[in-house]
Image 1 (tube, rainbow, N blue to C red):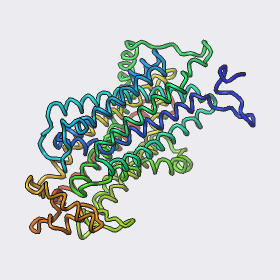
Image 2: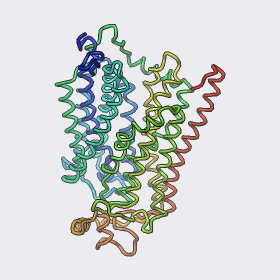
Image 3: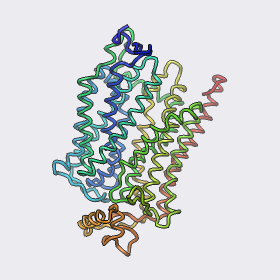
Image 4: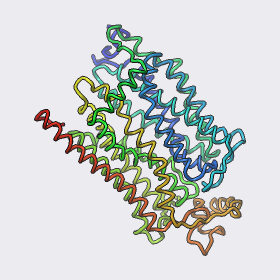
Length: 514
């Protein structure tokens, strides 16, 4: 049979089936799209803070972006099914390119300015806020189309090798994440922070042309009898109501929100903590590479040793791991004589120990993801009524959407009102122009800006810290991380209670349980 007749079973050398061309095109597209997204993801909160959006709005806007990316695929996936994946992807990448441009436009076009640090009050003009909101809406809408189109292409072209196909797909996502972060780091250092969005624009344009020139709708190669009927939007909304009426699914959704709430803090609380407490110019993009690094190098190992664990137990273990990852940040508070900014020489550079511990937090979050995230899909498929597995799995991203939407504003509240309560600020407007002196001093000493400021003329002897960074009260700092940990552990307890309740419900219906 020809490849167009049966793409999933086309013979290759050695008699093994080969993947359809669109499988590889889709994965290439996904690599570039993820590179674009993660080039900017680690710095959105810091960028918006320095753009003049204050202490709370950056995390709130960031949570809106992540919420749209996870929630909208429920609707955008249906639209993509109706108009075709290829057309949908082309439109999506146009939206993404415009969205990334809109985010960087205030600095590039001169109607906004990046400050040296995040300031408490909102100082940005309405035009800056409008550009940011437009950018977030466009990136969220475009990104929500990419997810169902690419994963749908992988599913439709995988054939009998679905496990291998999705393993490749998942690996490509994380490789794209690493590529985007490294390129953004180079661009940000050579130019300024706003140009991370230029990286996003570039990769979106590259992806557009990959789709335009190489991508083919997998539906075009399927026999008419294998094509699934397309659902209208009204049916999708009705299905959502049907799914949420299921007590099993809704309670699981609520119990698992805590996991994704803590996951969101990798891109909300941690960047704020690094930038406002530990370092003037933290390499957040490099620190957060621990997430894809752990997934790429430990996914197979975790699957090998723990793959036979029951899904619900694996999910609970993942929630506990991500909860305890918050606790790791308490170490520098109590075990370092110099406090959270106690530094260490590493690779000829000076890093605050607390920043390196933050990298450990990101790595542990990734381990929690390996245990919980993928197994959630398996568990949702198992608890769905027979014959409705696909329907329920279509809404598996709802916990991620709710965790993302709540993670930004609540994370900002915990950081500003708990961790930073009673903190001493070491920067006033008079000292801001002198930061260039500190930067020059840092270059001469071969030290980061924060370390140079501590050693140089900008260090205020009466205050225990470099100008521009917050000096947190250790008790409040510890309380903030403890609250985050408690939210996660509370989610683990809820998941355990949910499992006990579900077993009792199933015992009334059948002797078997999940």
